[in-house]
Image (cartoon, rainbow, N blue to C red; front, side, top):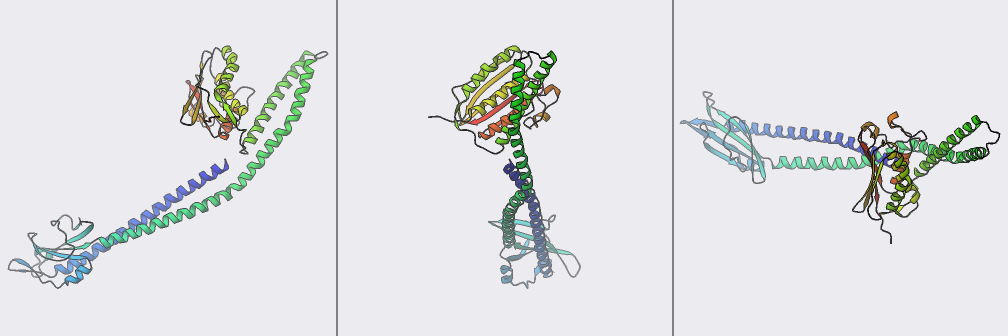
Amino acid sequence: MFQKTRYQLSVSYLAVFAALLGIFTLAVRVVFARSLSQKLTENLTILGESAAAEGELDNGRLQVENDFPTNELIIRHQALQWFDSQCHLVDQQGQYILTLPLSFNIDVQTQKIGKIRIRGVTLPVISSDNGRLIGYVRASQSLEEFDETLAQLDWGLGSGVVMTLALSSIGGLLLTRKAMQPIEQSFQRLKQFTGDASHELRSPLMAITTNVEVALEYPEGMRSTDAKKFKAIANAADQMTRLTEDLLLLARSDQVQSPHQEAVNLEEILHNLVELYQPQADAKEINVKANLTQPLYVLGDLVQLTRVFANLIQNALQYTPTGGLVEIQTNQVDRQLYISVKDTGIGMTPEQLQHIFDRFWRADQARSYQSNGFGLGLAIAQSIVQSHGGSLTVTSQLGVGSCFTVRLPTHYPL
């Protein structure tokens, strides 16, 4: 139980930390990429402004006095294009050149040629004489280096996140284990006390029960009121005995002891229990149906498994009104056995279902346990099933009924 709790706490801590770390990493990546992109656009704008100054109008046509060394543009993975006022290409230099038409609505354009993306910035060329528009210049640059930088950033951030999460998971496990130690020690002491107290109470309760039985067998000289008192004492002692037995069983099951291993035929157990509780069902006019398949074997403890299904059948009969139905059905899927006990009883609300397997939990008066019950039956049943490598689940609807399903791994005896 504590191992599962430590695991859940560690996973929760790691999930929250991973979410925060992911948000931080994403924010760093977005800010860095945006800053790098703006810097690239600013450099292209500066290049375009320098190239625009080289354009002059000669006989109504744009002339370019190009002083830009082509080799330097190639080394920087840049290019320049000049257009006249009618957007006709006049001249161009460089290797990475956009082939897109000029766009007057978007001054920054991006085009993918092959595997390389190219970004271009378009600027107007204004005549220095009269201030009229005489053409356009477009400065472009390959984004290969930009993409490589972002890829390296992503790799670095990703590696950092993985390493951080790995170290955090180890640290989280150590911290969780250290934080759970006081709780686990307290629980172990409480469990030990429960087991010891239950064991020690068995002897005096047995003595009380034995003496009361002897007194009731020889009522000579006993007043009628004394007989009633002795019967009340016997009932109270019987309840306390069953309570101590339940507490002792729970204390032992919490110690994760493996049950006695033997091949158990569930079909035989269920058949015997149906015959055992048939008179109780007949008294309430409840129809009991047992849809049992071929012999179904599991590996476990015969007494404990019998107690599980006896508890489930008793609950079904207890909470099913007169004229109702209790149905027991078995099914095998792959190497798993499913045994369901379904009733047409009063059912439970979703709020009650959340606590149905809690120890000492009791629903409202309409759904309370028997007067001699303590709310431990289903908790014991779940503990036994889990110790056998299975699970116990329940579905219920108020006013319709409940269905308890036991899942156990199959066993094929020689």
